[in-house]
Length: 106
Image (cartoon, rainbow, N blue to C red; front, side, top):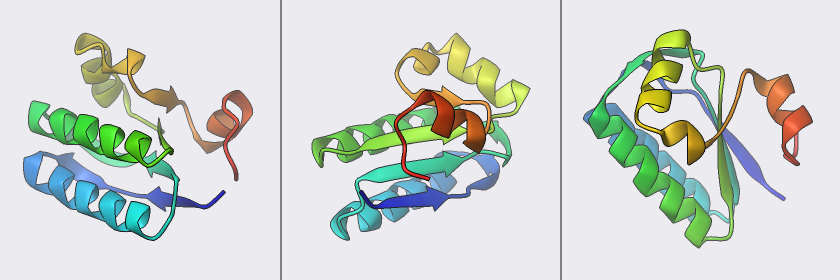
């Protein structure tokens, strides 16, 4: 199982999220079926980025893979909870928590 860790940073808005989506698409095209997104450097996420992440999730799942999010700050985590996206995405506190709670390759 191949995986890739992506590290977005700053404000994750529509433009930055589209770049993330392109990075994921490139990874999927290379046969990478597990995507880990480390949010430790993301300060805020808006609704455009949530939409782009949902599209990214669909793309990864269509290829037989999975996407995992971790290290969300309190503000970003709250946005995922308010939009109920915390029930759609697999979210962990940090990388160690991710690997302990999901069958994810390290």
